[in-house]
Image (tube, rainbow, N blue to C red):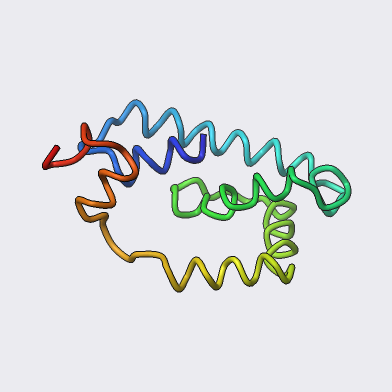
Length: 120
């Protein structure tokens, strides 16, 4: 759902208000589920697990999706995971290699195929 929200907010060739609203609301709902799940525990499955590894990259981008809400447990969880050594190294690599700004045509073709490119 986070990926769908990100796609329609950032990459769709033209705005689709229904999709933007639908996926943004779903991201907010999921943040609420995570907030409740993280109450009284450090990680989603009590100990650090693949569940945290899979959810973390999506959840940490919620603000960029316009899906900010008051979720102190989720915020604490994100900060806790960001402090892990391997995560720190991964985030450093991401910041070194991420392309700022809009996607160029080659990147659009790789991510979405020729149908979403201006030059198919």
